[in-house]
Image (cartoon, rainbow, N blue to C red; front, top):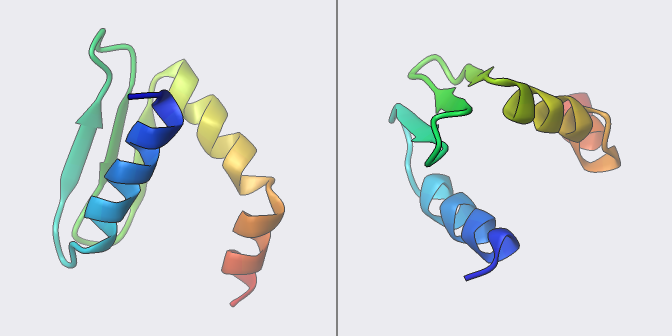
Length: 67
């Protein structure tokens, strides 16, 4: 399974979960992504922070934050 397919699968599963905390950890333990019961997204590790910052600058993220 390619990386983009895995991300799509993870997004589909997490999209069905409400009022639920989850943690996603890299197999090499280089990063951690968490969303808590306050709906706060927390990223730790260079790679995940870099990706979150890139996503924040994307047009899709901008539209979502304007809503």
